[in-house]
Length: 474
View 1: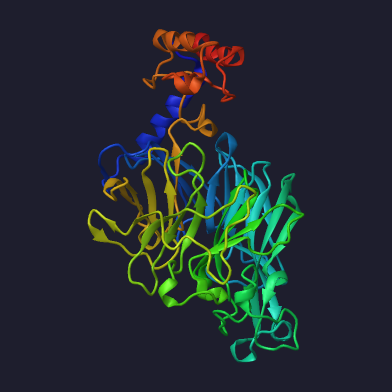
View 2: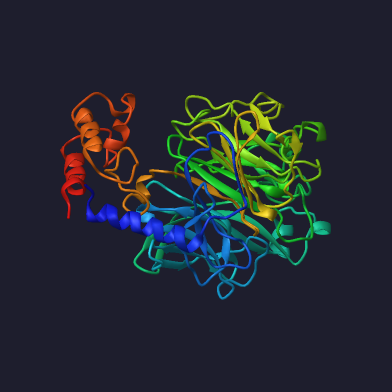
C-alpha cells in the first residue's frame, strides 16, 4: 500500500529517468556514498542539476543567469544560487557574481537579490547560516590613492586595489535583503613600507593582520578569496585566500576584534616562514568536517598545487583551544607543520586542476572531488581509490553530494515512509516503524533513524501521523 504523495514521488523520479536516460560516462566501484550530486556548469549553461549515481539527471533547476560560481541545496528542494549578473555593479573578474537567487524545486524564482554597487560586488562563494542568513564574499574597490595612503608600495599599485569583505545578508520578501553583519579585510591591515602611514609594523609581529604589500601586484584583484564555510559551534568563518596561498579563520561574534584568529598554508604571508614552509598552493573550498563524519572538526581543502605541479586533497587539524582561540608559539608560524591526511594520487596517478575545484568528506569516509576544468567528479576512498567517477562534460566550480534520504528532498525524490526503500509503503515498513515507536535512541537501532520522519531525534506520535498518512492514503 502506498500513498498518493509517494506515488507522485515515484512518478517524478521515473519521468526524470525516462527523459534523461542512462549516461555512459559513469564508472562505479565499491561502496560509493548514495545518492545525489548537485552542480552547476560554470559556462555555457544557466541550469543547475541533481545527478544520481547512475549518471542520470533527476532534477533540473533553470535560471536566466550563468552561475557566479557556487550553488547549495536548501529546504524543500530549493537551491541558493550565485548568479553572474553584469547589469549590477561596475567591476569584477573571474568568479564574479553580483546576484543571489533562491529557486524552488519547480523552477520558481522565490528570491532574487543583487549584491553589488559602485564599489563592491559579490563573487565566488557563499555560505548559508543555520538561521537562514547568507554569508557572501565581496570585492571592495579602493582607489590608487587610498591604497597608497594605507601603506601600499606605489610601485605595485594599479589604478585600484580590490580588498575582500564578508557580508551577512538577511533575505526578505521576493527581492529584499539587509546586511546585518560584515567583516572587511581593509580594517585589519599591516604594512612595513612607510613608518609615517597607518598600520606600520613588522608583519611577523602582527600575525592577525593582513600585509598590504604581500603578493602585491598591479592586478587589482590582490587577495582573490574563493571559498567560505561556517562553524556554528565555534561561531567562526574559514576563508580561502588564493593569492596568499592561505586559509584564514575569523570570528563571526560581533564583539570579537576581527583580526585573523588563525591562518595556515604559507607563513611567508606574515613573515614567519620561507618557501620550504609553504603547504597550500592556490587552494579552494576549505570546509570544516561536520559532526557525524570521520575527522569531525578538522578542515578539508582542495590544494590546487599551482607552482607545485600536482593537486591534492588535504585534511588539516587546526590547533584550536577550548575557548576557540588557536595556539601560536612566539615568533613561530601557526601549526600544524603538515597535514593530517592527504590524497595526491588517484588510483596511483597524480592529478592536477589549475583552477577552481573542490572536495567534500562524506559520511562513509570517502571524498567527493571535483576537478573543475573537466567537470570531472571522482569519489575516492581513504586509500585514494576510485569508488565512483562521472564526467559532466563542462567546467564546474565545485560539486556537492547530497544523502539519498536527505530531509530536504523528502516527498520529492523519496517517500519518507518507505523505510526499506523498495518503492512501496507496506507491512514491512509498518513493522519496522512499530518496532521503533517509543523505543531506544534512534541512532542505535538499525532502521529507526529513518522512522524519525521529522528528524527531531525521537520516533513519536508526530512521526506516526506522517507514516500513517502514507500507509493509508488514497
